[in-house]
Image (cartoon, rainbow, N blue to C red; front, side, top):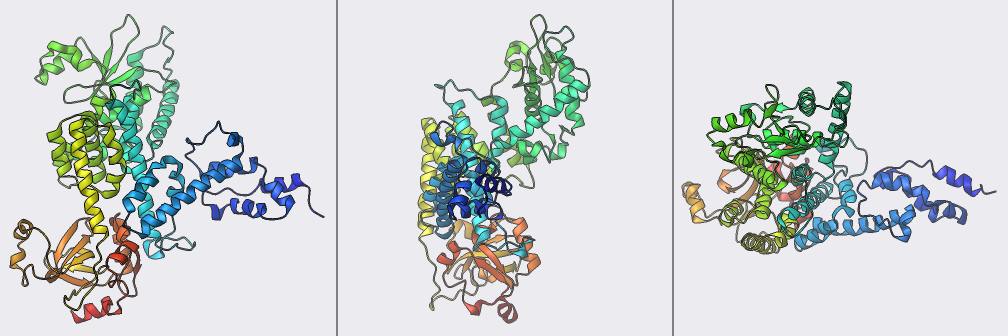
Length: 591
C-alpha cells in the first residue's frame, strides 16, 4: 500500500541540499519526478525546491520576482539550470577550441551573474591527486583546464560589473551617483572577486564597530546633547587599531596589496592612507553609526572630512596618523600642515572639501601605477594594471598617457572581447579610438594564432616537444615548453639584445616558447634547453606557482615525465602529445 502524499513530502523535505548537485538531494527529486504518480506529485511541491535553490545559487539578483513563476521554486530552479546548461555548453567549446573562443567568452560573460554560480562550481572541480587533491570524486576530463577558463570568465564578469558602475561616474548626463565606498570596493573586482564580497566584509566590520561604540558608551543619536562627533571618530580609529588596521611600514608602501580592498581588509591590514580612509568612511557611514564622513583630496595624504551639526565646526580625521592625533581642526591644524607641505593655504576649501568617487579612483589609479614603477620585486599583476588603465580610460581623456599605458599592457584576448569591449561605448572619443585600435589588433592576432597548426616534418628536426620540462643551460631556471618554431622568429632588435648571434647555431635553430617557475614567459633557443623529468613534486610546485599553467596543460604524466597537453595545444601541436619517442627518460639518458 502506498504511503500518503504528505508523508512522501515530509520525507523529501529532509533531503540534504548541496551546491554540487550530484552530492545532494536534487538528483533524488528529479528521479521522483520520473517515478510513479504519487512520487511525482510529491516532488512537484514548489516549497521542496527552495532550500536547494538557495544553497546552489548564491547570486539571484537577476531572478524575475514579478513573473507568474516567481513563487514556484521548482520552476525558478529549472530556469536557472537551463541557463547553467547553456553556460556549460559554451565553456566546453571554450576549453576545446581556440578558434572562436573570444566570441564565445563574450557571449558567456554577457550572461553576467546569472551564470556565476555554475562557473564558480566548475572552478572547484576535483583535480588529479598529484596536485594535492584529497578528493575521492572522479576527475572530469581536462579538469585543470576547465577550472582555468571558468575562472577567466568569472574574472571578466566581475570586472564588467566594475566597468558598468564606474561608467556612471564618467557619464555627465546621468543622475546616478556612485558613492566613494562602493566605487572603491569595486577595485577588487579586477581580481575576480564578486562585487558583493567587499561590501559584505565592510558591513561586518561596521557591525563590529557599532558594538564597540555601544560598549564604550558612545551616544550615536545626533539629537541628544551628549552626542560628540570627534569622540565617535576617535573611537572608530581606536576600533580600527584594535582590529589591527594601521599604517604600513615604509618598506612595504608600494606593495600592490595596499590598493585592493579584499586584501587590505584581510591579509594586509597595515596599508596606505587612502585604503584606511576607505575603511573608516565605510564604518562611519554604517546605518547604525551614521557619521557623515567623506574623503578629502588632501596633498600627500588622504584625510576624512566630517560634517558637524549646525553650530559646530566641521573637522578632518587623519586615519593614517590616528595613533598621534586623529582629529584635525580646520582653523588651526590644516593651514599649518599645508604650509609644511609647501602649499599656500590661499584656497583652503580646495583641500578640505568632501570629495566624490571619481577623484579618489583616479588617485588610486596613480598609486597603482606608482607601485608598478617602484616595486623592485615587480609583484604588481596584470589585474592591477587593468584596473588602473580602465579608470584612466573612463575618467580622463589624457590620450597620450592612456596610449603609453596601453603600449605597456599585454592585452589578453578574453579581456579584450569582454569587459574592455564593454568599456568602449562609455569612453570619450580620444580614448575610445586608442582602445578600439588596441582591441582590434589583439583580436586579429588571436584569430591568426588560433588558426596555426605546427605539424612535425622530416625537413626540420625539432629536438624537443611541447609539455617537456627543462633547465636552462646558462641561467639554470626551470621551465616547460608551451610552443616552438623551426627558427627564431623574434625581431632583429630582440636577437641583438639577447646575443642570439653568439649561440652555437645562432638564429638558425628551433626556438621554444616557455613558461618558467617564476611566472615569466620567455623565448629560448634549443641550444639552451637541458631536458629534465617532471616529477610529482615538481608538478605540484608548477601548479602552485603558475596560475596560467592549466591553460596549457590538463594533467601531469609522471610515468613519462612530462605534461599532458590541453585541447588547445593538442590541436596546435598534433604530433607532440602522443609520440612515444618523446619519452623524457630516454631523452635525458641520451643527452
